[in-house]
Structures are given as structure tokens and as C-alpha cells.
Length: 156
Length: 160
Image (cartoon, each protein chain N blue to C red):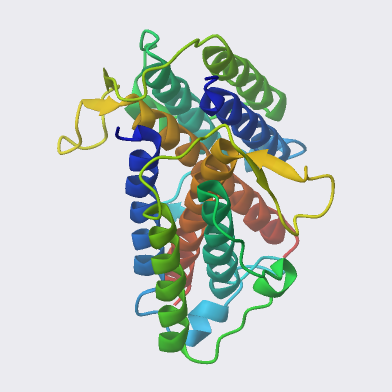
């Protein structure tokens, strides 16, 4: 039987990842590391955080093993080569899409262990929550990166 | 088997609604209608008005409730007189959106349902309920992030 929630997630996550790749396409490394204002994150930091977080949450949703992750380090990302950085984002995006293809049906009520979330986060979440959170979190940051690109281009 | 999707969706949306409140709360009234990058960008008032109307409509599609009245173009002309007014709008629509999910009962995620008027004629009028739900939530997250960044930019502008 078709899992319609999984099918919708494949479509929407695929669209968002494609938009992330488009938003960083062709930007010089200065733009990737530029901060629109003091105290804000760079495009590189947000993109790094986004693809690694999405990979973690999607693998969690699908019941796969969780990768090592150092959340604070994601926000310190400062690439020295724009093309290498884009290749990294592409590889992580591919991992995300592969995770969503790893099963044809998911028990969305199943409990999944979380990892390294800290604070008052619960040790387990429903697979449904992991999928929905991954989808929503990805989309939010993609739009931030697109807006930052607009601001960079307006600045120059 | 209990469908855990609506409960998880309500949980994520509750967090997102709170993030939207946080991004607005404490802003001076003049910040609400400020556009960070000129006329090609949207103000916090526009983004908030649009995302609340849109999310209520998409969640209605997802759960098979009647579509509410909606004038999408007017959402992008919205302005707000005061921060308490805009927060009241968030609270009102937030409660309506969560009630739609909490009262939904069993949902057929494969059902094709009518959506409100789409921004492009190339987009389909009918979509699966599953798509409507996930799109509603990701679209909300998209605009909450946008409002948060708009606030950051306003605050930096105000200090220079």
C-alpha cells in the first residue's frame, strides 16, 4: 500500500533541497560567509546546519541509525572554497533523499530515540514528529538562505 | 491503529506559533510594516497575515473541513497598527488552526481535496490530504524564519 505521508515528504523535501542548492549556486565564498548583520548567521552556517539537521531527523523518522552530529560546530562553518562547499551540500542532500527512499511504508506512531538534542528535549519522539519537524525545519532555513542571497545581491 | 500524524502536526505547529509570537512580541509598532530590502521584500505584518490565512486554509484542506474565505492578494497588502493587534491575530488564528487538527478524527491521507486558489495556474486545484498537511506546516516554518530574520535586521538597523 502506498504511504501517502512518505510520498508527500519525498516531494516536499526534494523541492526544498533543490531550492537550497539553487540559493547557494554561483555565490562567491565571500557571500557564503557574509553576515547580513552582527549576531546573524552566514549562509554557509545556515546551509551546513540545515542539511546536517535534516539528515539526522529524516534518518530518525525512517528508523535508521543516527549519524554523529556536532550542532554548535555547524554554525561555525566557514568554507574557503565555494565549489567544495556546494559539493558538500549536494552530498548531504543526496543522503537525505536516500533516507526517504529506504522504506516504502513507515509506522508513524513508532517511538524513535533522539540524539544530542540537549535541553529539555524528550529522549524519544514519534516517527511522525521526526518527519514533520524535518520537513518544517528544512523549509524555514531554505527561505532564510534565499532571503540572505537577496540581501547580498542588493548590497552589491 | 491511532494516527499519530495529526497529534505530531499539532505539536509542531504549536511550537511554530510560539516562535512567531516571539518574533513579533516587543517590536515597536513602526517595525511591523517595515520592509527589510525595499519593495521586493515583505514586512512582518504581511508575512504574519499571509501565513496565518494560508495555514488555516491548508489545514482545512488536509482534514477535509470546509475551506474558509480567503483573499490571498489582500494578505500581501496587509499592515498592522500595533504589536498587540498582530499578536491577537496570531492567537486567534493559532487557536483555529489547532482546533482543526485536534477535532479532525480519522483522516484519509490519500484523499484528493480541493485547495484554495493557488499562486500560479500551473499548480493543481486538488491535492492529496497528506501533501496539504505537510505543505501547511513547512510553509508556516518558512515564514516564521522569515519574520525572525526580518526582526533581526530591524534590530540591527535600529542600532546603526
